[in-house]
Length: 280
Image (cartoon, rainbow, N blue to C red):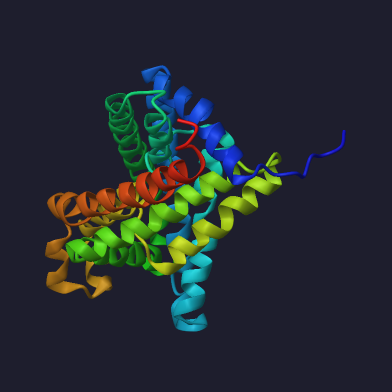
């Protein structure tokens, strides 16, 4: 059968999100959504662990920029799994605000689903942390992968609040644009390309994703307890800053708030204002 290579225009994407996609997500069965949220946490964590393996040692041989570029390229598999295989991701679900602004669902209901999905994403992320730690794959390249994971986590919990916040804004602006553009395509190849470039851009730029950090930082906390990894990292006393409290306060809170502004406001709200406000 012939393949339809036409894509939806932005106004049609806004209508599709408001009238069907976001309404179905908001009114969906809570148990099903929770399971799909766990899947999304695992899928994004797959992208995060693949990025950790890929960037290990690249900077020294290929340069800082190339390491960031390749890390972003492989990380994009996470959102591809979410969109194409099917899962519920908190950052992408920030687009539910379109249906609320249109009056199709209540804001309270949207916030409730955000909370449910956020929790499911966290559980899914921790599930892959446990699997990866138990697998011993962090020992690869003479424990270089584990050292890289520990350094990534430590750097994230030491970001100043506003730097973490604004990195969260940039991140979810691009993530929600990736979701937005994937809806424009009517075939899987088109969806893959629509997802790849914005996700590669956000990771290579150094922006912060609250759900990805649910893998990056807990993995670092697990590895911190391994004396061989801790000593090889040469982080010394800085490792004292890596703990569950700093994970939540120094990273998750500012990054999550930034993600909401980037996705719900800059994409969801402003596109609603441009394309749907008069219809509403």
